[in-house]
Amino acid sequence: MHVYDFRMTLDETVQYIERNILPERFEIYTNEMRDYALTANGITYMQRAVKNRECGKYIMPANASTVAEFLGLLIERNIFVDLLTDKEVCDMTMAQFSRDDMLIYQGREEGRTEGKAEAVMELLEDIGGIPDPLRNLIMEQTDGKVLRKWLKAAARTRSIEEFEELAGLVNKEIAK
Image (cartoon, rainbow, N blue to C red; front, top):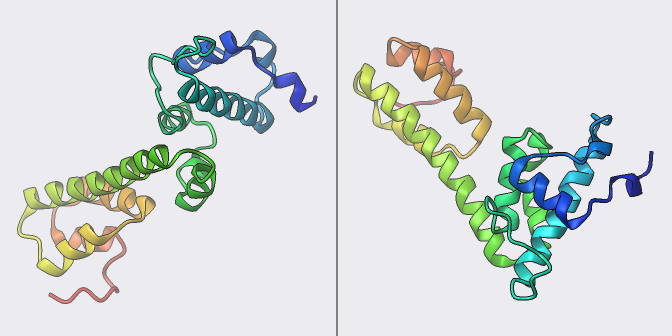
C-alpha cells in the first residue's frame, strides 16, 4: 500500500466531504493511512475551492465552506480526533491556512470550551450556591478534557462538595 493508492478525484472528494462516502477502493483499509489520505485530500480540495471560487473547477461543498469547517467534519467523523482537538497540533496545521480560517477555528474551540464551562455552572446552580472561587476556577478553565470531566461530575452530583470530590478538586486550593 502506498499513499498514491489514496489519491481521490475531485468528485470523490466532494462526495466524501458532503456525504461521508468513501471511494470503494478505500473501504478495505481501516488504518491511519486512509485517514491521512482523507484529511490531506479534503484539506487540499477545500484550499483550492476557497481560492478558486470563480473558476468553476472546484465546487464548494454544501456542508463546509472553509478548511476549519472541514476539520470540524473530520472530528465529527472520529478521524484524528486526538490530533484535531489538540490545540498545539491544530495551531501548527492551521498555520498553513488563511488567517481567517485560523481565527474561525480558534473561535469555535474557545466557544466550545466556554460552553462546557457554562454547562457545568448551570448544572451546579441547580444544586445550590456556587462559591465565587469555584465559579472562577470553572470559568477560567481552558482545558477541554478537564471541562468534560467536570461536566460529567456536575451531571452526577447532588451537592457542591460532592462535585468538588468527583472533579478531583478536594485537595486543590479553592478558597471558600
